[in-house]
Amino acid sequence: MIVGIDLGTTHSLIGAFVDGQPKLFPNAHGDVLTPSAISVDDTGTLLIGKPAKERVISHPRQSIASFKRWMGSRRETVLGKRSYRPEELSALVIRSLLDDAEAALGIRPTEAVISVPAYFGDARRRATRRAGELAGVKVERLINEPTAAALAYGLAEKLDDAHVLVLDLGGGTFDVSILELFEGVVKVHASAGDNFLGGDDFTEALEQHFLVETGVLRTTLPTGDASLLRQRAEVAKRQLCAGQPAQIALTLGGREYSIALDPDRFDEVISPLVARMRAPIERAIRDAGLRGPDLAEIVMVGGASRMPQLSRLAARLLGRLPLRHVAPDEAIAHGACVAAGLKGRDQTLEEIVLTDVCPHSLGVAISIDLGNGVRSDGHFDPIIERNSTVPVSRVREYTPVHAHQSTVKLHVFQGENPRVEHNIALGALDIPLPSGNPDERGVDVRFTYDINGVLQVEARVQKSGVVRELVIVQDGSGLDDAEVKARLAELAALKVHPRDEQPNIAIIARAERLFAEALGDDRKQLQGMIVQFQSALLTQDRDLVAAHRTSFEEALDAFDARLHR
Image (cartoon, rainbow, N blue to C red; front, side, top):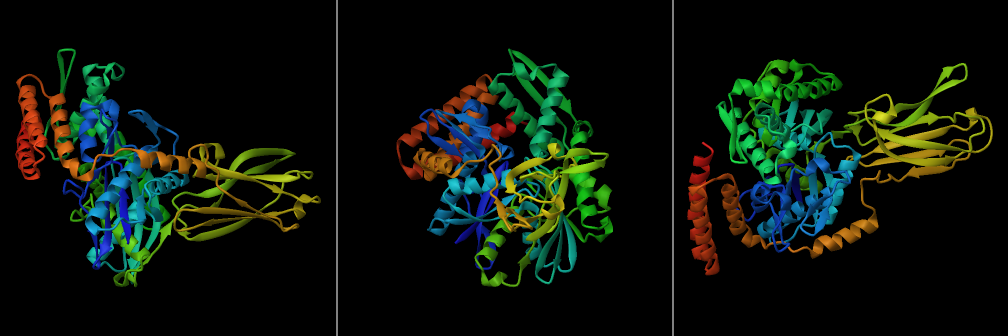
């Protein structure tokens, strides 16, 4: 069976298309949302998901979250005795999700469809595929997140002959897509977005506001206090988004620092971020050749889309409020499950056709003749324009600049800037040229871009018939095949806490997190609760442990509510 995976910045989900509908699989805690977080305990054993998220505050040097933003980069995170690349951290999350799918299905899935932000470039898409490979699953397809959401929404609402705008504000990215649904076809017309704008940025804006207002320097904050500030800013953000006033307080060196905010002040603090969301929305509508009134519906997905500021922005720009009845945290995962069903040729989906677009322009570096023997190098010539329907193939002819050139070096770029130095280099190849007049030594360059975001570049010399094909170089950020095999072996050897132990580990981690936030008698109370639960664990009586865990969780809920009221 092919599973669908929503690999998110904040949470990740897994499911499949079962009995004619998408079905999400719960994790060991009974939740379909698994936090995208990793932690290492004192024994070097890995914790993934909920227990890891709870340890981000109490054990910040041994824990990490929100690493999806680093996909496609060489950034490494040290946890315990080894370092991890972003795709390895994502692979650990995927592996945990596969454990949950195996528990639900009775068999371990070996194929998957994984969602990615529509505005992810080539390097990030390759890194996502690598993450799946490192987790031991074949990635059958990458599906853009807004496309997945619209696919799930179109099936659920039975829309036909309608243009839908999807606004996807997740923890780390903002995507905009315009899709048309007609006669069983889901056609993407345009995508735009911002790979560095998400719910985490709104939380960080509150952190920065706290630091400015209190005069505290971020560089002086110990790691634990910095994590605590992040958690309290996140709590305040949720209260403010619900229309309630909030306070951010932090004790440093025995001194209490605090600020109070109301929703109006919150709007002022985050106004630069809200303004950044406007441009991708306008670009997508313009690229699709539409106007606001042409859109039948506006759908908002992604956990951060609950922020009322996005709804108000959409209402101002488009003259209507977005739909609210689509589950924002689960819509993309449902769509990934539908895409998995399509890939697996599920009979109930045989009449559905799904198209997508190339999110970025793809082209080559060229030299322009300015006259009088003067040339200007480094100009970007797009061969495939952004938002071209895929699969797509385009060819363009180029000639050498100088009469005595023996080779042409073709540099391939991705981006929207007229100068290549401001775009992303994807690779290069050398093309041998025959001797003769430059006008007779033309090179046909063909770009082919498929539904999985794979770019093939083929260059054919017209006179000699010589053909060269570009194998995308890993641009300093990827792994070659030998490295993948080595990393696979290392990941397979890592010790991970058994799935059935995760709920017990998670609740202790939560209590430790609250202990880190509390002071005085509250800490003594929490310490006693932790010791009591650990005593229950020593009995190894599953029924007794389950009963203690339930009462422990209820006590922590009450404690948490009192601490953050």
